[in-house]
Image 1: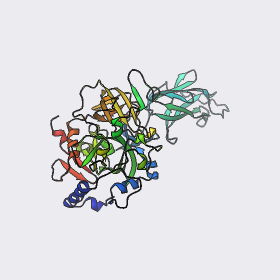
Image 2: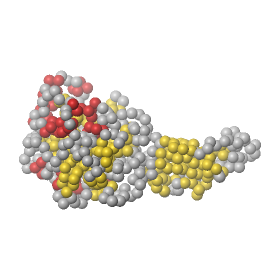
Image 3: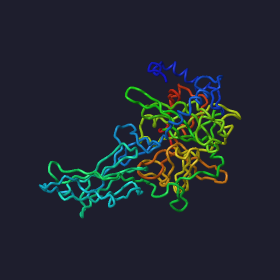
Image 4: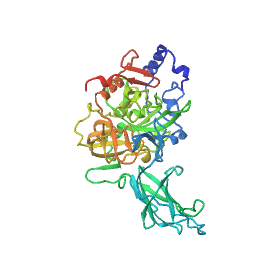
Length: 501
């Protein structure tokens, strides 16, 4: 990683060095996992050798989500949520409680026992499945009267807890309704205090009940009706399976004054381009450029048709992948993504990786790229296939399909029942899809979802996306181009939003 002094070297020196990397780097090809000693530093061999089994095991899906308060989070494979560009932890919200508990005077008796909490009468029951909003009920009794009842929620990480006061619903039943649950296994228990002297006696329920949250409203892999597919393995194969693949990369995280690099996975698609010296991969901007740290990803590795691997999952052996592995030379993003932060930049969550090389051993020499349709269609009622390599379904190529809608809160396309999980970010949206040939027009990419409901958003591939794509096509990226800013490992394209649509 460059030192602070190197990062602020003179414009002339940085331009010369970066143009050397971007323009003269040798072609990428299907390379075995072991680095070839003849490979120049920072190219195929070094990148592939970087991805040891230990580093791959630490890779997490680069999954951006928005919670019920409009805050952005990175969602890890275990369902935990890390604040993105803010420091507010994810919290549930209380929707309603019953009447306030009116404390009775102390009984003056010899009550030394805490309230009785009836586990058989608690709801939801242990192991029940619920959605994003849940009503909790508990039966609590005590001869001295009940002073307070609290519902304690245990988050899926089994460490974080949140406590809510339950109201008196009558007949010794106390309850509250909470919202904001995310998919995963949660827990909950009851704490009750009576009206005995010296602050009362407290009791805790004997059992922590488990609660399975499924915001899809049913089987995540099932069919909610009609022609809707929520999350299934793609079995038609065809050109789209060859063109799409998994992307491994590292992104910077600022921890105090220190920057660390964390491993992630996304998806991308080889697309048809005019660059005779390189191949272009369409993906999501959040898989190319960190809009919080304001830096490009490093050590990017593209594995097309990973579904066809002879291995069992993502590994460091490119020989067991039918097309091999390819190392992008740089990324290209819209300045609107880099100058804003999620979720204020969701309209520009598209980007491109450029893989140097031509000829039969290049990426385009191995696969048929898909056509990006510019501008994207304006009739959202047609069935759309969203595809990608979900972390939880490694190494399979997954998809959802349904009529496309418009997301009303943010200006994006929207697939309301899509259940693709983390790792599918950057994967293609195809409309229409020819399932016999497995090909079609790419109109968007998997971008983001909500924490407490199903659905997938995708940015509109409009003139701005075409403008950025044209720079990815550029064989000679020039620093004196007023619309281009060259940075370490990437190019930022300015001014695209000022052009006609």
